[in-house]
Image 1: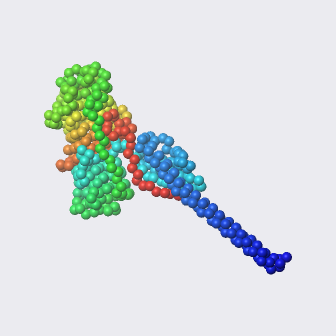
Image 2 (image 1 turned 45 degrees about the vertical axis):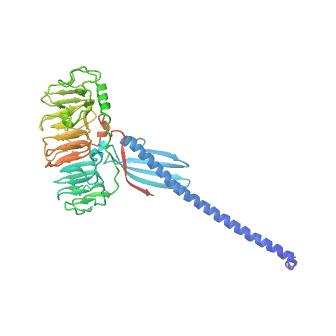
Image 3 (image 1 turned 135 degrees about the vertical axis):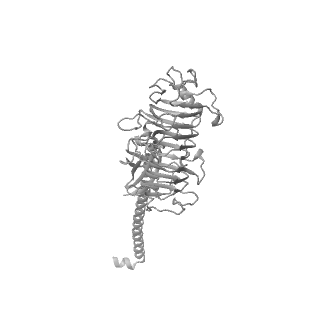
Length: 476
């Protein structure tokens, strides 16, 4: 039969058709198998990419929470659904630094997982000392800090930093936006050999990051340059805007509840429009030049005012300033009458001044538990669109955080000028310039990590937190 089939032309044709169909069937299965394999690979590639996007979404969610809540962020471990994927996020605050965080986010899509790890600095502006550029418009090459000073803790400056004398910048992190760090002699240092700091310097116009006094570049590892990392990525921070003067004045007046004479010779009687927390001899806030504005005094040469222990009061005998809430001063303000004056402030309040502020003498909370430490009960804010001048008889050349000469939260749109030697400050200064020049030596600025948790009212930039990414990488 098979022989007849091969001898028959029709049989040969049938065998040919069967053979072709068999080959086509085999090829079809091969094509289908390859297509399925390609589809699986394509799906895996898509899931692999999607898993990364899911992990990134988890990081962004954690960063948003840090910007809103800072160190009070809760929960620190969470999951979020992103499309068909899932992000598992864990944010950990560094044990040694309140403002340093590590965020890990694992993104899952289908069968694929990818993990990101991000290092983040998270600050309130009031965690730092800052020279942000005078009037918010300092040009490239201007100076955000001048003179001899030592800074311990986070520091941000717009413009050049020129360190003279035995200045030290420790603790960190240290940020320079559009400027250069320049050592004016061989005694100044960035970080310590045993305690290097993170430095972020974005030089202007292609300049070098760090220079010696002759303009020669200095690299990490030089005895004056002790850094754990050096980056050119620096966030752009602007000095926060002030509210309107009318808003501050209205706020202060609305808080006035005590029925006492406000300030002899300045406010004769208390009224609904101008309570004793408003130092103002008229209601005109357009006061002209600084020289034409009245000078108000809180010092040992004036009479007592207010009720000691009340919202705003001066105890001339014990040199105690009582302050709670917002105080508004329409004019210039002097606190203290000499560099040797010692004033203790009680309460949690802010003085907003439509003029310049002169601090003559030591100004700090009451001494307790071996220190002049600010806390939730006693903290002073000073705010002006002009300049704060500090003239203090410095206590010693080697101060500590526990026994500073002055403490508080200072805001000056133009600058803070410290004009005497050995002055130590604990808290935060936000200003256009930090000025320690003109022969001032050995000043010290220390940040206070907990300050944002008990800031007094009416301080610009007190809402929200600043989040800055230090590194972003994929890990296994």
